[in-house]
Length: 439
Ligand code: ATP
Ligand code: MG
Image (cartoon, rainbow, N blue to C red):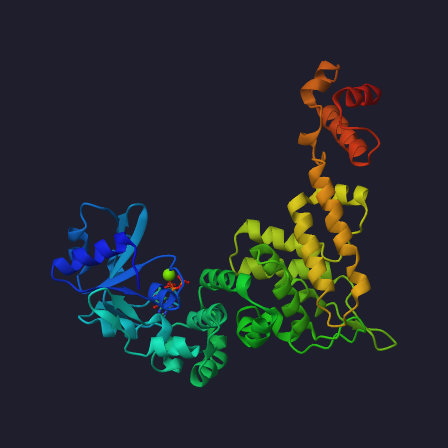
């Protein structure tokens, strides 16, 4: 394992002062897989006070000191140095009830969630790998450290973390670990919602349809609205898949953008309450986009999602049945109303939705390349899509004799309409002429 210089210097300083120091956790796992770690955590038998004194010449982050962590800032990077510790239950489902400093690295590793995350390595001491994390990585196995049942009861977020590590590194949960993950998933109901949301945000961008299907019961434990979708027969000639399988494909097929992934995951939640069957035995879902948007709003509020994410996801779900057409005027209007980025996302969502029915109807898909082409043209033309893009502004209108007030806004909106409808060019003299008529 090759460490960046600043990490080596940290370890050396601790060792030169008679302490042990190892890299630990995610960075050892990633490096063992030949990946470049995104950060480096160290563990040591030095107490937080001692670490602090040793690095008193550096910038320090002391927010986690009570739990044993001193952050040392070295050329712009923070290295977290944590005293070997063990911890109690997560009775408030957020933090361990207590932490206790321990003398050996093995005890520290024993508190960690999975064997692949419970390895330490130092340039002088080599590997500490008491639970066989390296062998599990080699064999592609995700295994809880110790008794899986007890570990997931201590902190049930580990179940969702397990799903994420399984997906990210292609690890198959070992039988007892998998059984405990599935059986204890309902415990996640008690977790702090922010922790769940954050974890889902890490998971969603990297899942495939197959991953979502595999972990459906775990997802449904934290988003109960998904539960009735699993296995739900849509009774429609348009859909070969059950509702959750369809949802999983849409989610796996949209680009790995967080808002889009959330929108895809929740786009059809409204189908369950909106389901009806006609006299021919065919299923319908009238109004499911609007109902689904309201449900997604509830779900994301419950998960304490940031407002910006919630609002964008709700908008995309609300509009996901508003069929986009390969018509430049209409698309330009839609771009003006929702913004170019939202229009792009909507198109991605509709394309994935249409392409994930399992019925293989390619004619329906033919319109998408056309629409993408037109959107590209609109972009390249540098089209006027909002009042601020107009070649005239309020000041120009006042010079024309408009009195400050509502009339100016009304006139500007009128001019924008004319430009959007291609009735006039977005040119100053042309628009001023129109404004004169308006006045
Ligand atoms: P990444 O940062 O790439 O998502 P990571 O393994 O570094 O992965 P962190 O959340 O940064 O994950 O945690 C660092 C280490 O702390 C983990 O490798 C694991 O050993 C331990 N750990 C983190 N969260 C828990 C937890 N809830 N239960 C037990 N151990 C945990
Ligand atoms: Mg990490």
